[in-house]
Length: 186
Image (cartoon, rainbow, N blue to C red; front, side, top):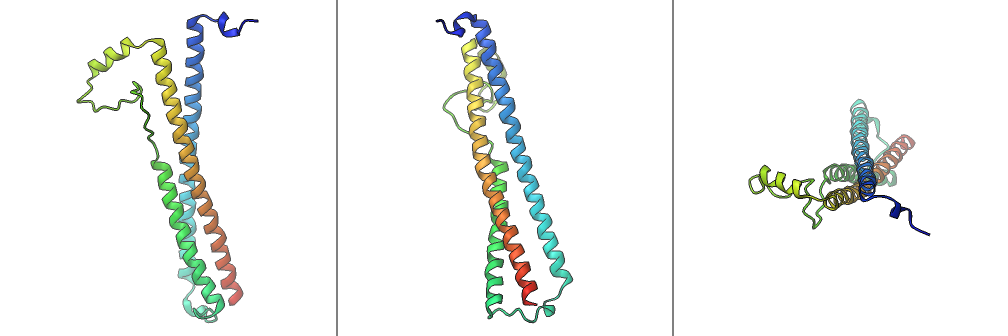
C-alpha cells in the first residue's frame, strides 16, 4: 500500500507544507497577542483594585479602627497579610511586564524572515539576492524556524502569565482576608 504523499507532486506537497506552516504561525501569533491582552487586562484590574483600596482607606480614618492594635493577634495578622499583599501585587506587575516583554528567541539558524544583522552590515541588495536564490526547501525551513520560535515565545508567555494570574489571585484572597479581619475586629 502506497503512502498518500507519493501521489502528490513536489509543488502540491510544498504548497501543503507552506499552508500548514502559515496557518500555524497565524494561529500561534494570535495566541501570543491574546496572552499579551490578557496580562494587560490583569494589570489594569490590579491598578483598579489598588485605587479602590486607596479610596476606601482615604475615606476612613485610622481613628475609626481603635480595636486594631499592632501588638494584638488580629493586628499582627493584618500586618503580615499586608506584607503578603504588597509582595503579591509587586509579583503581579513583575510577571506581567516580563510577559509583555518576552518577544525574542535565539535559534542557530539564519532566517530570512527576521534579519539578525544590522541593516548597515546586510544591505537590501544582498538580502534581495539571497531571497532570489532561495529554493522551496529554504522557504519551508525559514517558515518552520519562525513557527518554532513563536511556539517558544508562546510557552514562555503562558508560564509568566500564569504566575501573574496566580499572584493576582493571591492578592485578591489576601485583600479579602484583610477586609474581613478589619470588619471582624471592629
